[in-house]
Picture 1: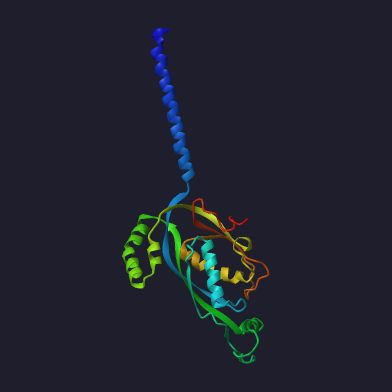
Picture 2 (picture 1 turned 45 degrees about the vertical axis):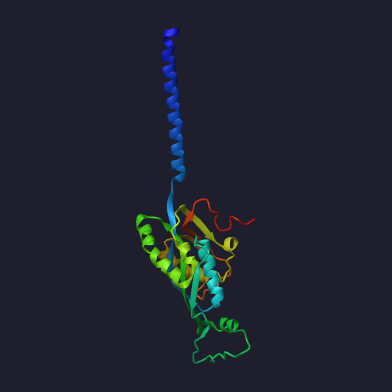
Length: 247
């Protein structure tokens, strides 16, 4: 009936508008759901330190630097981790019943010290400079921007272009669980003591959280099993976790 067609057309337009509104609302809700838990993040230069003490798991300077850098990269640090280690020589603390160790002896000094119990110590101060993810709050961004002039000056004076790489780049990130283990970063039993001492100190300084630990170190730091630790960190959205990119 011709006189009813305008009403039918109007009703159809209303249905089309409602349908379009529902599709748009659904799209917005899905985008919001996808972004739920994400926060803007930025890499910020951090300077942290801890003490490595042992009477069993003696680590040479280069080995200690390498192991600390590998662990920090697995936690989300940028590749250019700088690790400085002091007093990583092997020390002898003689008592009345043990002879002084001759540094020119042909035996392997590390093996000699491992076999001589608690009379020997390694007491190493580990200092780290690292670009580590942090939530890009207005306060953090203002602090980074304030530090830009100092970075530019250092870059000009030293001729080091890497300082320019420290300009803030904001990226989406979320809290993820990262597993440190033999299968993800090739941890060995002797890393048990390093993780036991390193993670609690750096967790406080860098703002990540240790969730679960499988550390079987005894009172001398010895272990028969590779350690496994699960940590919650701020992780770039979509980036593979340690071990995920292995075939």
